[in-house]
Image (cartoon, rainbow, N blue to C red; front, side, top):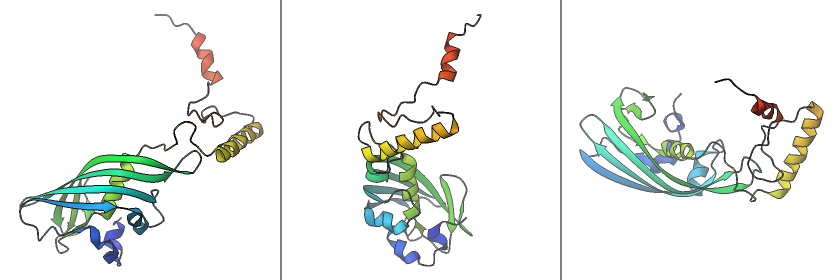
Length: 200
């Protein structure tokens, strides 16, 4: 599937993030960007990250056949906490690489190698920047202990207790929302195995 900046006819609104590869001379080049809330708003409502403030440096090396782009991205983003849904600030400090080649049509040969139409002669990095930022964040995004929204965690705790009563099975794999510690409760099913003796 082609990314939005290839298939979207309104690509002009992303033009700030175009790099004119074909017109560059062989050698090294550098591009800098500042990503603000407006950048994340530009990408649309389907993204998980809605706000942020980041500095981007793109070091580009052009050879006869390829373009090597090295990205350094640093700053902060705001994302919803997976536990209480309130916004939380997360640091971003990541480095990524992208190899670009000219071809007949757009394709991604791997996570690092991209083919773009030679007739276009340029690459739009707006979505690549977002992917690099998103991939640098942990899978589970939660506030530090004690910083979650108390009203929400209380509601979740009551919902968990209610659901457990109805199902007759308390899911001990869930996070203990009452003390906001982020540690899993002890599972009695596994505790029984601790007393077993194994012959060597």
